[in-house]
Length: 279
Image 1 (cartoon, rainbow, N blue to C red):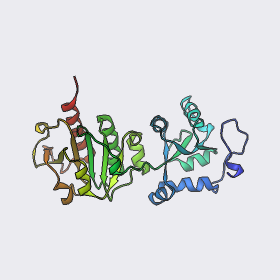
Image 2 (cartoon, one colour; image 1 turned 90 degrees about the vertical axis):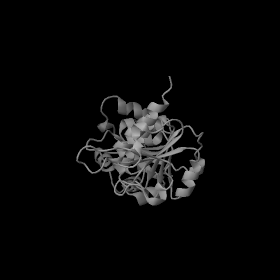
Image 3 (tube, rainbow, N blue to C red; image 1 turned 180 degrees about the horizontal axis):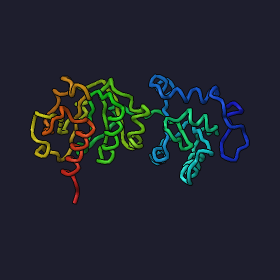
Image 4 (cartoon, rainbow, N blue to C red; image 1 turned 90 degrees about the horizontal axis):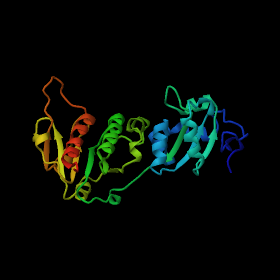
């Protein structure tokens, strides 16, 4: 049974509002900014009205919802809260101070929710051989990963596959920079490089490189493509680069030494989009 303090399932419920950071639900939720606690609890935190709408639109089921009506701005937060009330989530009213303690935003919007980790295996990924799949070699920057997820979603990619060890896809910075796209496409983590490329048999495995291969506009992007992007610091590791069948060159005419992996990935994803546009 829930502690009496936590029995809040609507804005008009007279039960006490949580005001203490010692409340067990608040203690556990605040730990979710750390990867080890996300893994231990099997969930992650999400805030931002657009992200939360996208989470619900995708069918993701919230575990807990914390709300503070005093921080609602306009009608959007109230409309979103009404959607949460129709789910099976535990809903807790909290004070402004507690909501701010749960939030990473400078101006909290009155709602923070937790969702179960979305874990998919490579074996669960079914591909026809005509899609775009994104392979990331041990990415380490959460902002880059989130941006790649957002772009992959926009480009219609069928999956993003991360070779591990890598940054946590459910890091708050990744979630925020993905703008909710992590709910829209499969994200798979695997240490099995050989198994990964065996699963992508029949795809054109295209790797990005500043100097090697054909100019990216000259590559064949038609049909099934697995776009492989390297680690931010060292590029593609040998165990990954050995599987590349086509190298796409992104030459740099200026003085910079490297191109941000998320930017490079976006250019190449849309090369695939252009080649496969229908009509």
